[in-house]
Image 1 (cartoon, helix red, strand yellow):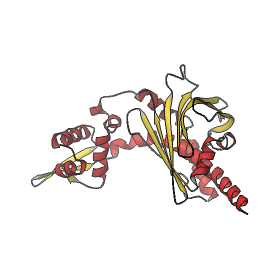
Image 2 (cartoon, chains in turn yellow, blue):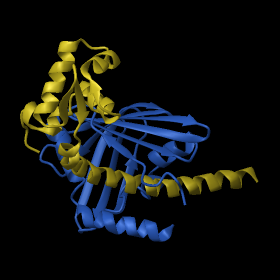
Image 3 (cartoon, rainbow over the protein chains, first blue to last red):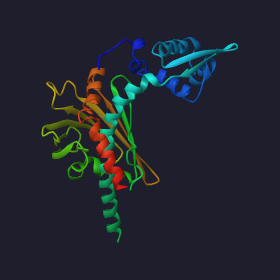
Image 4 (cartoon, rainbow over the protein chains, first blue to last red):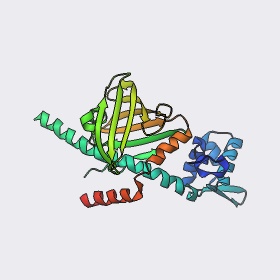
Length: 115
Length: 162
């Protein structure tokens, strides 16, 4: 994968743990920035900076409601990341599913020993 | 059929890391055995990508390990490394080098596996740290070699066996 600037690439934008936290929180529903500040325990300028990066890669969208600006998750740009990772995940699923069979045999041995 | 099938989770906590988690319906002592004993490793390490042909494990600090498989395409895939920390049956830290690149040691990862037992079930966490993002991404890319079709075939197989 080629490297790209954080602000142009959703992959890089989510490499930052705080930004992933923000996405997790927004996955639960729309929130104003004050909510995020309280839940993350960060200063508002920091949260705003992260939100700006996330908006630039279209992972977060915003709308005004009365005096509030509400932020929400737009997961679509994560789809390629998910596809990329899911094949690697599949490899581990295949391995661990086979390990389940090994473990089942070991459990059987254990109970044979108890007899 | 086990309920843990297909429940491995992969996340990327940092630029150079891969984090894999999985729960097993088995006591920790047995998961440790399956993870460290050559005859048992042979049964799972290749996944559905091939057949394990050789497993050497010298399970002591500074000891070496090497796994070799023949992939379904007929080519050989080998990894090796060294054990850095061993606290059976809960913690294993080792290096992991892929022999298919020009300088395996320079791109080697450090893998920390922790096993936690709860109510007779075991929770595994595996944190893989690589020298940089490029190496980490190459490792994830390697998971794609077999392609999607194979994955779908396996899914069908598993579904048929339920």
